[in-house]
Image 1: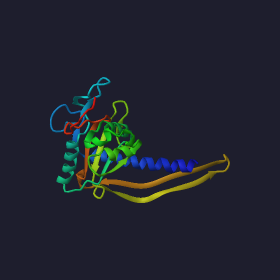
Image 2: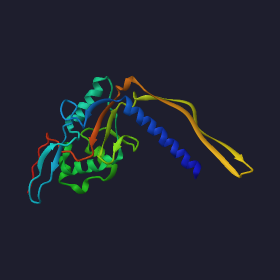
Image 3: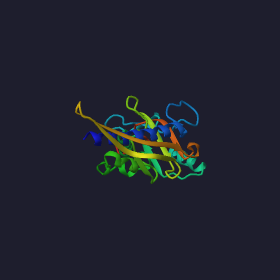
Image 4: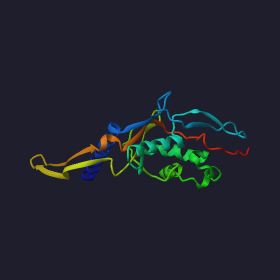
Length: 222
């Protein structure tokens, strides 16, 4: 059990090293903490109002609208790469379940069929305005107190390289007099980001909250 646990710990460590490389080298397109300028995301909050009244629109809430997603993908394409994957923390899924329910990001039909809304991580690709693969990793930066984190759009074929000098292996030795058995798990690897990070576009400090896209019009039956 301890050996298997050590192997899982090594796998988590490797995944964290990759996430750190993304955080260091990615090119930023949006910053949810920005208060003005072109890096400020344009997603809007959604006020449900009192029972029996129509919802009303609030101000920007640090989320990504459909237009922002277009800009992120266009930035990647301007760098001569193709968007293949979105990477985010798993705790974003509640926000996208709520986004589906309010009909944000163009999925208006879901608004009237809440029982059809998938729960868990399956809601994220459903809520995306484009057909693109979504990858979740708990190693990607996410602040659980502020409910903000980083979202990446990447070209998986041009992200980076993993250099392996020695695969993960174990060494074992015993101290017979003390009746101690020692097992060491080790690997020799390195990670490098290709193209100066131009194949990785990041939106930083994006709030994990439902998004109402102002480009989508609703008909509310009150």
